[in-house]
Image (spheres, rainbow, N blue to C red):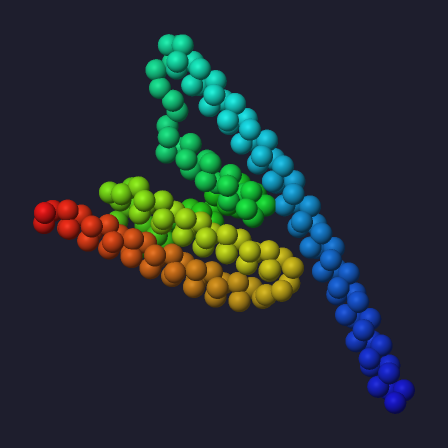
Length: 182
């Protein structure tokens, strides 16, 4: 009985130490997320102010056109992902590029879509994959999953992204075929 109690005490002590380390890591990640979200909100406000200044300059005839819309849309998309996940811009850019490359490799260029709705839908689905991948990184940092689990799940997400892009490309091709037949 004494031996059983000693084993239980050791197990509880190990568990308590693990839990304290886990809470420390979790709290650190949470503080980083909050800091990132504050920074992103400030940058979004700065972008909005800059955009309003550009529009005023355009209206007063001092400027001919706004900045490149594709570049602006991508920046907004990255900031939105940063707000949702709390991860750094660099990490999001890298992960987003990885999933966009997977989607582009599955079929035609993402710019080829004839309907904005299809491209927006594909972007939304890719963003969901990116968010899920970033959550895997968080789980790995919190030691909730192993590196092998992380790599396996990442590969499944990349396959999912490729199939989504192929399906979107097929839908675009069939809708353009329908339009040609009429």
